[in-house]
Image (cartoon, rainbow, N blue to C red; front, side, top):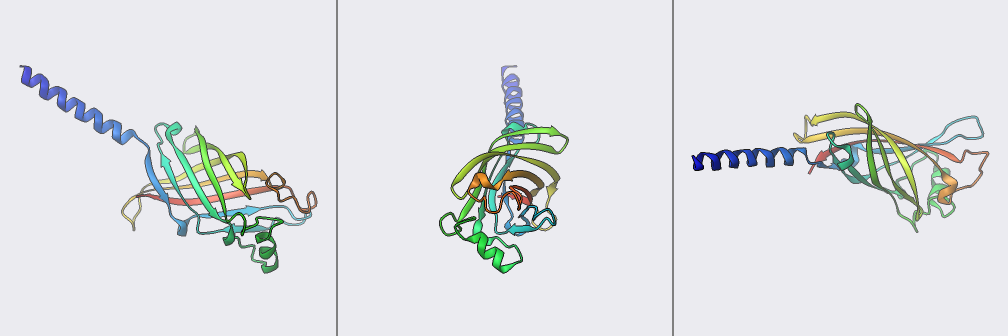
Length: 193
């Protein structure tokens, strides 16, 4: 009888441990080849140009059952900025804008994740550009979660947007004629390590 009790308790404990492990946030690594950061702004009221960044890296801990256990850390190499206008790209790399030589990386590190609806999350965190850190909120949407058909690994895909004031990061040239407000759109795929 005691042996049966011990076995039953052992099985129950093993099941609980397995359940706890599966409920923990999984760690995913961003795929730089399927991650892009696109920024847009208004130009004298006439147009809304864009610039993009590539080679973005980072990690994502995702727990859909308890979003508060989720977190994200992203690194964006500033030297990859591309406006598709060579003169403007050169200007963006210089000291008056991103100062790619002095501050080669922009970063985002989350401090809080809140699930706001099915597959939707508000991700609060610290955005650092040009050595200046400000709190921003990314509005993120889970596009898909499942096994990647080529990698055969658990994978998640997200899109996220936020808006910042570039003048707060030491890039206030031509405001207000060229908008201070910049919209950031991120799309990413991330797979388990």
